Image 1 (cartoon, rainbow, N blue to C red):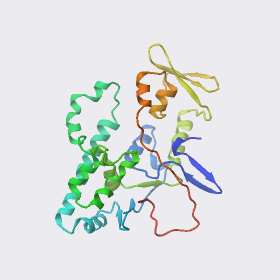
Image 2: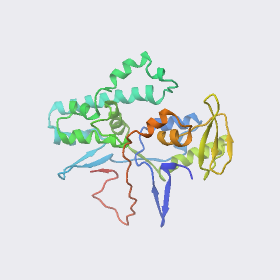
Image 3: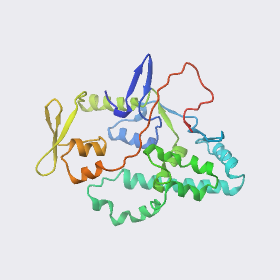
Length: 295
């Protein structure tokens, strides 16, 4: 099956998404389909969530994060005070996170760092200075929000990456920007619908072939350090001009590639926590629970 962590579970007539429940940064998805000469809207029906989250605080108070700025600002005033500085500080926060978003997408997401010196290129210095890499996400939030409630509400998003807001780099508040400005979406039919569409395009338009249930034992490396194919666990060897590996970094370096000092170093790293997922089917609508809830 396709999808990996974004695959499906079918059980007793119910379908569960195993992977993400947040479709963020829609422009990035649109661009990937455009690379294939396709319009994503011809393949996927996207539904915008009416509200991003309901945040439930420890004392029973709640806060709704939404793309409706007028509604969001009214909710902010309950915690930050009904004065001009509340809105000014919020818009300053939004502007900063917008800069983090735009520059991170351009310099990090869309740049291929082939060598270490590409990363330390002098032309990146102005961008790095504006990403506030010397601050944490929580530190940046403290500059714009005075209540602990709002500091929590606008920093918990680092958990998507297994990070603490007290440790995550300040630039990661770009997540809050894309949620507020672009919204959270849901592909009708589940997130796996995106991957099904990509697979169909690859097969029907470009003649690609997908081989499932073929566990890879190792990536074959030639004497020059170049990947030249893969060896399957059944002993078969598949030679190729290009090998793309999207397995976890630590696993790939220690299980699929030849052992190196770097692989040993990675294996000793302290990894961030994963998650425990519960898949529940309900026979009724529970009005107290929103689409996304954070406790």
